[in-house]
Every structure is written in structure tokens, then in C-alpha cells.
Amino acid sequence: MGSLRNEIKSVFHVTVAVCVALVTIVAVRMDARDAHNDRMRSLCAVYWGAPDGSAEESNALVQAERWTGISNLEMLSYCRFYGDQ
Image 1 (tube, rainbow, N blue to C red):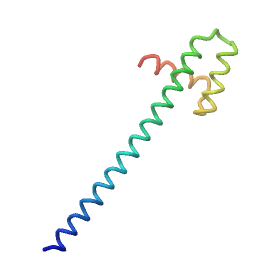
Image 2 (image 1 turned 90 degrees about the vertical axis):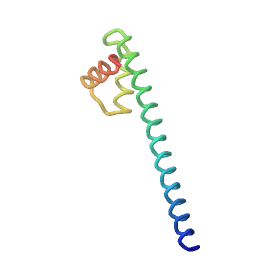
Image 3 (image 1 turned 45 degrees about the vertical axis):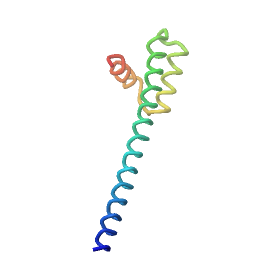
């Protein structure tokens, strides 16, 4: 009877440890995604606020391409999506 209790305790502790690890991983990924989205919103604000063909617009595109690999047309779509949020 005592060994059964020890096995149950072991299974419980392993289950708790796995759940804690999963919650931690999800929280870190959500934080990273939120940070990325905040950067892109900032770039979109610069992109849309800059005069057409200006250095600010070009810099926003260069930074967006560096961070995400998206092109000019994709940047327009991306910023439209975030503008609607």
C-alpha cells in the first residue's frame, strides 16, 4: 500500500512539473509574439506616417524586411491588417 502511494505521488509530481513547463513555454512564446507585434505596429505607424518615398518610409521597410522578410506589397497588407486592429 505504501509503494502505491509513492507511485501516485511520483506521477502527480511529474504531471505538475510537465504542466508548469508547458505553461512557461506558452507564456514565453506569447510574450515574444506580443513583442514582435508591437515592433511591427511601430514600424507600420512610421511607414504610414512618413511621406511617400521618404527616408523614414524606406527605413521602416528595411527594418520590416530584416525582422520578417516581407516585401513592400506584403508590408502594405500587413500594415492594413494592423491598422484595423
